[in-house]
View 1 (spheres, rainbow over the protein chains, first blue to last red):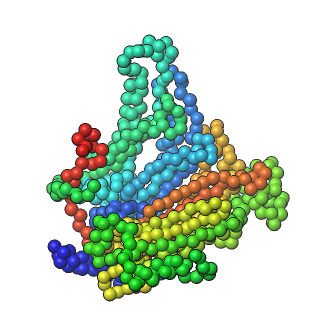
View 2: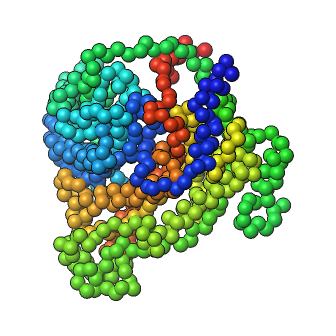
View 3: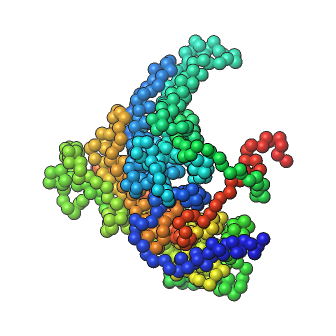
Length: 275
Length: 325
């Protein structure tokens, strides 16, 4: 067993070739190298899937989110706030995509889309999109039907599995809805004291808001002519608007088939001996 | 029992520990058993735990001004008082149409631009800590240091400690690297990189501090009743400071002769300062940290081939509490 591993490792040139490479290192030109915030596991899997990282790409926007107050006793979407969330995310995403296009990328993997409300100003938030631009080793058409590099918020592990299974990511699709949930009238609340009852207004509000977010995400998927959307997350983000105003946010990666069959090797069952 | 040390090479206490290590003392390792085994399987043995540290007094940060002078807007102010907000408020507001003159100033421009002396001091701190750690590694005849923890702490007043701690390893082969390698990546990750045909070269950092004057447009966009709008000045500032930090990170990676870098962190802080009456600037600092890596596999395709496995262990939190022993 040990001699097997040793010859195996030696055939890969470890550690001798590795040390030779370090012995021959000469200062290079900036621009010819890549940077990436993928983990080592993700980096190696993306390489194995046949993609070369070109560089870290990011886009950001510091955005002043306007003010809109919902009617106290009414379930309603706060469209000013929904629009703000859409617009600012769009700004961050498109700036990230522009950086990737400038690098000649086929796509962007491992995208993280974050919002951080800043301490120094009222209603100021930074919207940031970060990912790693990649190019396929083999020539091929990886761009989506809008001619842009694909984007995906899947991890390197999920990306590898997706490509193995014969699918390609098209783009991240999202739907947002900022919703104001009605307050209950005092009389109504008094009537429910000591009872176990459903509060239909609340239930309906949550249904409405989530359905709006999900259908908007689906509409974006249809625009990309996707076969499906994978890795969907449905989030309720309170941000800093108080208990009755919440952003419902759906995000996922739209995919298209690369080939007709989607066979994937049968996984090996393993029992890890770690904690 | 301390002696006066002139700051050259290693302090006497470290020197003594290295001598004990060279004389055949047992090597200490910060890896777990499995990490050590993973590296051993790649042909690297532990030679000892190594550390580098420096306490630095950063007493001068060098505010170089935001580049905004009332003189930009109509001849007030004197060159010697750049950026200290001498102009009156009306004058500053009147200058809004000349907003293009307001720009971002970065520490990388050198001199006193935007706290450049402060950023230089940070670089000096981190670089010296890593260098002293590598000196220990060299003394133990190691080839590089794996799993480095790189930290800075405030020690009160303007004193800061920069510290780098890691485990020195030596290759079983005959070739020695030109420069000792270092990485913040843990032993497992280094082993996986080696199997994938990549070798870590050096810990790399990029730091930038940038400053931008709050001009009229910025103040308007950030007002409570401004509605939905991007605050273009702040966006420009954070974009610029990250860009600058990334560029310095890339420049340093290239200077090692590496092929790429895996970033382990990128942070951003933004806050405001008031260098003068009615004059506000925003300052942002960005810090990028990672490991420069070099490729040694020659084929076009990656030499790894992962196997799909389905772990038979229960993910944490899925076993009902009653069944736990």
